[in-house]
Length: 260
Image 1 (cartoon, rainbow, N blue to C red):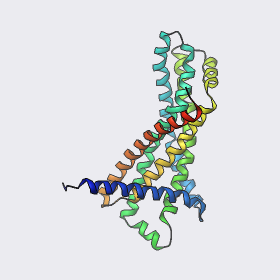
Image 2: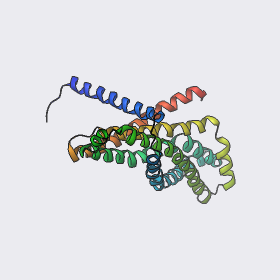
Image 3: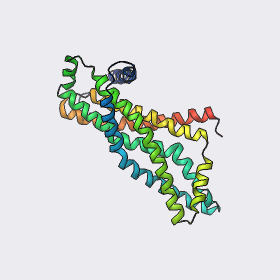
Image 4: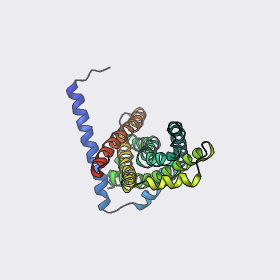
């Protein structure tokens, strides 16, 4: 294994951050330039949104049910089982719904984008697009960014609803909590701040998933092995960034809305 000095490693990381920032900035700036490739956006929305729907449905139901199952045992000790709807509602809408959906979509789509674009790089298809006068970032990256942000927003809403539904099934059939009481308490506990927090995060997560996946795809080098490395790195990097951004966003919004 070739030894690399810490200085060279630091330079490579700084250069990678710089290249990623340029790609992310251009992907947004391209929205205000013609042509806009609406057909590609619709195609990517179908692949990302509809394709991710089964795993989002499954994870939403299971997370909501598990949250209700685990919290019910604790609430029973204090005679507060009627609060289970409030706990599931706040937990799913503010934190678990957005972050679990983001991680699932990142695992499925960020790797797909990296492998697809990486394959186009190593087979010189992107160079051919440049030779024909087409901007690869505008044609390949911007539609994926827009579609991921748009579809993840609605996938998170679906995940939240299914998580509440899964919690209601556990509460009703296992712990004999009244169905109407569960949904009334789940609805009444939510505040405007909770909904805003839960719907802002998917927008940020979607942007991270698409830009990270596309960055590692267009940066792939070294043939098929390089494409494989780019795919793995895209999933790891997007997942880590989602967790980090979730923490920072939660802290920032809690400070703004003065949560106690």
